[in-house]
Length: 236
Image (cartoon, rainbow, N blue to C red; front, side, top):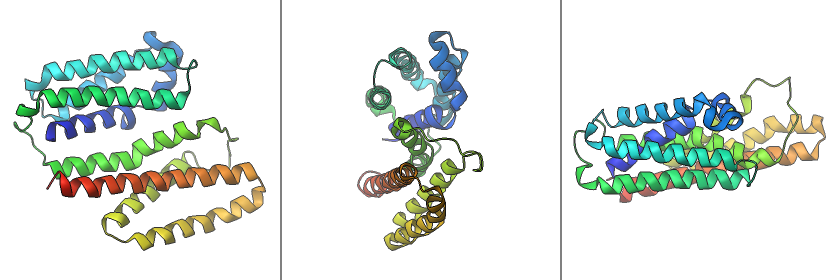
């Protein structure tokens, strides 16, 4: 279990936290010729080596994951524009996860050797990254079908950071068992948004904000429930 958690943590770091939008755009444009594609693979390699404490016992598995990651990403780049972007995102992540699960399963007898962190800490970090960075990417992919005009009066990336903070609050409240506070959080956000929507008088904007807000809260609740379920049944 520990090896699987660490490999998943490395994947989340490499694919979501440490991959700027600039890299993604350049890869889509240049594909196999993009230098960022290979820099992205290097980041993944370093992330896996780091979370595993540079234990080279797992080097063959790490190299297999890296090679598979390269082929999966390359396939996605050449399929982009020919298939639905949301479907590609889901299939891309599923393929990565299947490879990780396969490698972790192969090394199961060695999974307890010389790790520096406990399962609880690694699982908490992984969940927090899913609540923040992974959820932001999922929302962006799902909302990409609707293009809204940029608002120059808004702070740069303010919506993304607001979403990250609200999901962190939701996670903390659920872990503490304070479900009722989440209702107050939704109400507070609605009050702040009401004046913007009143001035805009734009039904599309209202629907866009509503969908994004519900997606954000749904992902936060979902990851929080997964955390609560697994920490009791698997990790303890």
